Length: 251
Image (cartoon, rainbow, N blue to C red):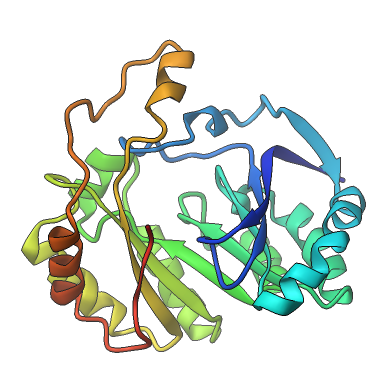
């Protein structure tokens, strides 16, 4: 079995604890207006196809960095959960090497079919941490922002809570789109119903992916939208009012 991989980052610092080897998978069902990786959307065009064994061989030399920093491997996207059977193989082998495993997901592809749930339960056996991106708490606004509703995503968050899977919840703060006061309060209320959330993080919107739209010959959907200020981010944290561990601000 081979995974469809877009790219890798050898020593990332923002997608989970410690220094991390980050694998960006190919394929995503969401079309977030602020996406900075539109080149990962295609479900078929993968820059690289690789086996779990090949990736583990590439990753193991970084284990000293993981050990000293409390890091490990994060699989991001695109959407990693589109390739769960492959992730099962990869994470099983990583855990055999005593390497911390993490999935960064927006859960846009989740469902509650027996097949999906079976793969999910198998995968969670080898998953130390899940980073769950909740794009918007309001269903209609989520649909306008990503092209998909959010009902199944919020239910997935509840499923992870029921399974006692450690989770960090993350929310991209986009001025004029995801920073409404009432919505942020509702987001915090929802998170408070979950008993597995170790951290809540605000990810300030940025424009670092604009050049990719230009390269793909596409217009950037959020042209003219400014990045949030430190004051905006602090206000969002206050409105969400997460009562768990100390939140982290991603720089």
